[in-house]
Length: 320
Ligand SMILES: Nc1nc2c(ncn2[C@@H]2O[C@H](COP(=O)(O)OP(=O)(O)O)[C@@H](O)[C@H]2O)c(=O)[nH]1
Ligand SMILES: [Mg+2]
Image 1 (cartoon, rainbow, N blue to C red):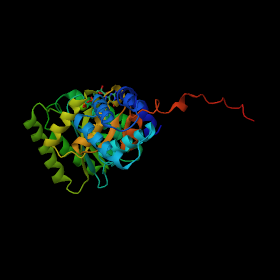
Image 2 (image 1 turned 180 degrees about the vertical axis):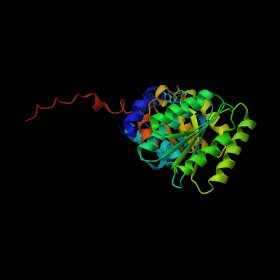
Image 3 (image 1 turned 90 degrees about the vertical axis):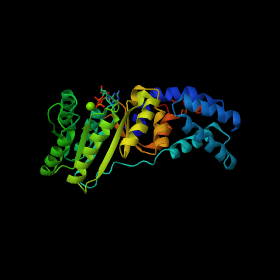
Image 4 (image 1 turned 135 degrees about the vertical axis):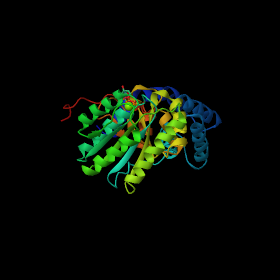
């Protein structure tokens, strides 16, 4: 299944919600005027696109309507797709070119870090890469146990220490093991205790220093994992983490279970950090590289606009 079909299925709840807000405005479209812009802005906020994204989007629409004919619902939909997609950061894959590459995964408890790491590891091993998982969430023993299960599923190696161990020491050992075993990628799981900001910053800095010292030439990514079901709360987590770490990408999880998928736009457009992956389920294959144009296509409704969908096709075999 391609990105579009899978994202469309994963986004079912979100696109239903968007249909009821933005879709209703689009279905009643006659012309681009201030009433429409106002209704559209409200609908976008209802669809969790965020207030500032919504206001920027309608400003852009007002502007484009001056130079461009937007006379039909389809034209309005196309132009909205373009605007929202262009507001998001450009699509870019993770850079793992300089081996062993290090992917540091951060985020608060329960957002889906460990699950995402398992899925990501599986996608790399499926491509023939050797992957090392680093259990630097040493806060609870269960965290390393969970990562170990994912390592087995994904066919990846793992380095873990006991509960309460120094996360930076785990990272140090993971790097040594990865070098010895010629691994392509090291993925580091961390504990996300954002309520203690100084502590978290300290811990991330320590890990950062170890990686920089041991692997000065390796590719580095720092991924923030956010739970899409938490809506605007995910946006504020993103803002806070962006202050304590140099984020290179975002992973939005649990899009399958929420009507709040519109926050993907708010985060990518507002934070200036690209969304790299989205999680659309708990299975090993349920992590999709993010494509902004396809995402927006799947988000904005077509049914009300395209009445020919209702006409049933002739059954096959009746033609001669
Ligand atoms: N439906 C759904 N559940 C997910 C997704 N990603 C993670 N989860 C679930 O979220 C819960 C917390 O995930 P976990 O990886 O342990 O979070 P962590 O504390 O950040 O490491 C688990 O029950 C996962 O199965 C997703 O994309 N969709
Ligand atoms: Mg975890």
